[in-house]
Length: 73
Image (cartoon, rainbow, N blue to C red; front, side, top):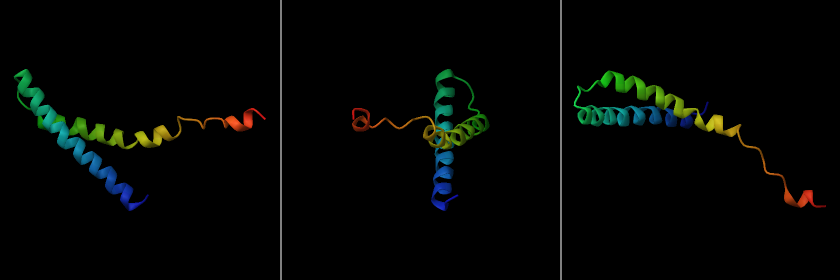
């Protein structure tokens, strides 16, 4: 695996954790509950890891459009 790709994956997970903690804090205050930072970190770290595999999943889902010039000959 390329070094740049690995760094991108780590950065995605870190930002998912940061945004998850912020979302957990806002959600807890809106719901008037205590903030559970550990749960937010775990849930959004898993979300960040899953988010890293979306490009690989999407690569295999599309097919190349047929060439319109070769069909009508």
